[in-house]
Length: 224
Ligand SMILES: CC(C)(COP(=O)(O)OP(=O)(O)OC[C@H]1O[C@@H](n2cnc3c(N)ncnc32)[C@H](O)[C@@H]1OP(=O)(O)O)[C@@H](O)C(=O)NCCC(=O)NCCS
Image (cartoon, rainbow, N blue to C red; front, side, top):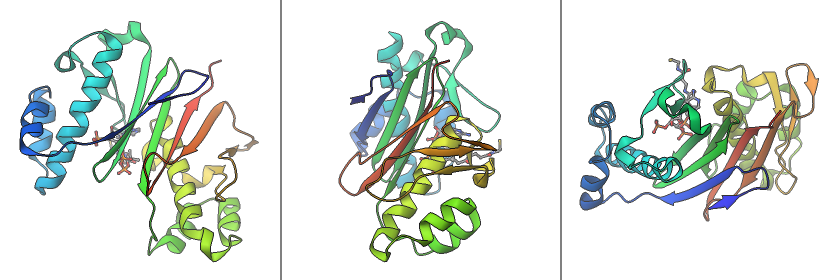
């Protein structure tokens, strides 16, 4: 578990996906979550969803002081899971991301948070995605990277952008060229612009390697 000085906690978990673990995990899910699990076409995806949700419930339950099965979730207009209104008193916010059997969870007190993880790899369509989804400034920074830095530079940008749009709850429906993030490997993660204003505009961003072969970013709102 990583905790920063502003109280944002990040938990990294390897998801248990064996049959015994699945039975134990499924037992703490809600009826709606079990229905969702049963809609996955691939058994592997069903198992990962069940394990990821069970771990989320366990982590939320520990922080709320309730059993995992008693945690109640609600959803924002674009699908962001949040605690149901009966937990409003806790002011706990969270977000999660998964990639293969790795899950990352972010928890924050009172301020919105978003997190994203990706496996470090060469993305075949990276240049095309950058051309279509990055902002003009990000496209320029990406283009200027030496070839050896491009795969991680691309994933730095992608995870940072996704963490931001997940923090605001809009997901990928949000215009991805409406803000700029830093992306060069080895340089600090920063939000460089939001809309017409330079700077982080009240959002903080961090980038980290949650496990060998993975890169992640977490964004949270600065307390006002
Ligand atoms: C949210 C989103 C960015 C996730 O991207 P991804 O790389 O496929 O998946 P990740 O593993 O990083 O994150 C998935 C988790 O994000 C969370 N999530 C879903 N929607 C979210 C949103 N709008 N904002 C923040 N978090 C969201 C969920 O917990 C989800 O996990 P789950 O599916 O196990 O419940 C993408 O699916 C998206 O843009 N969704 C919004 C779609 C939309 O606009 N729908 C409109 C119709 S209501």
